Length: 131
Image (cartoon, rainbow, N blue to C red):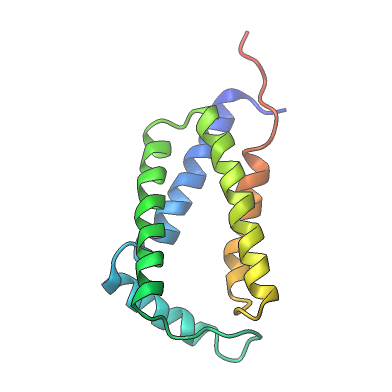
């Protein structure tokens, strides 16, 4: 069991991670640069990392934009309720990331999965009631 203040710090830390990890997904230009870096990093490791067409880029940009807004909300107000919802979202993200890798996507995705699962577990911990 963790204290409420410690839990709020975890929620805020997960939000800062999200902001850092997804900011480049938010625009077509920043995503193109990120995709290039990830494609180079994925060379020589199992799985594919294909070029994206405009529809894929749109989905990445929508994801990035939404996650940035969600991260800013949790940075400004890291309440327990938001942490619980975020934990659920992280477990879903991790499931889809693992599924994608099982379907042949690059294992570089699993680097993100580690953070999803770690913050998901931390934000699922019981919090001590305030006295």
